[in-house]
Image (cartoon, rainbow, N blue to C red; front, side, top):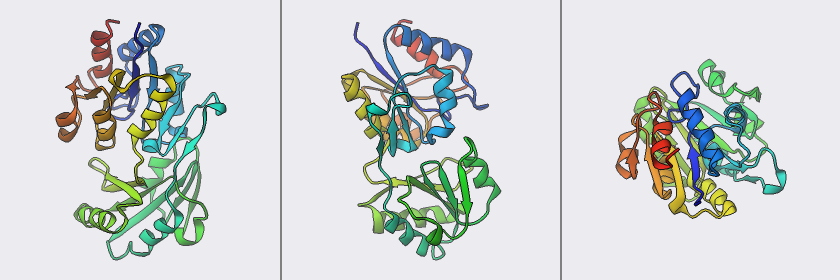
Length: 268
């Protein structure tokens, strides 16, 4: 039997809108594992905010977190720990010009340590899952280590200007993308880092060619992964640019999109 590598984004893909995994999709994933296929999670979330789903699916595989900036095996340190942070110098340059570009707030994550420039309950709600260490204050003084990722919170009318600045000044050292509505947040990781880079590392480990990689996603942080995978599958609720480059479109995250597609493709 030819094994497939199945990569699952979490929010808007594996997870329903209430942040649960549907019984049907979960059953199909367990059947896929029993049939010998490899199932992994590839998410923008940190590990602390995704490990509950890793446990729920009884996974024993590596995981892609922070959109590829952190890849590791939760149960096997000898597999390797691949952390690719931003340079602190670059982050401090962005903080210095933030007022010019009407930035409301900046949040930096150094693995499970979270630093927030200004107190903001909405941003705190995003990062509190998994009980990270949180510090609030001037990032220019507080940040001492290279951040895994940073989030820039702004108004809708200023998102394009900030992204243009990041592309013009820092394109060679960082990779940025905007979150879906209603958030006006720009997420930044190191250049060349995305879910596809993390997934490729895992595929090589299991000696599975990309032609037998099935990846599911719904947002622009899934673009590289969906384009790279042999079976790049957009959810029915995915953004239009993702559907345009996907090999196929399945049902929505509320309609068992992953379960329905895998059941048919792998004859589970």
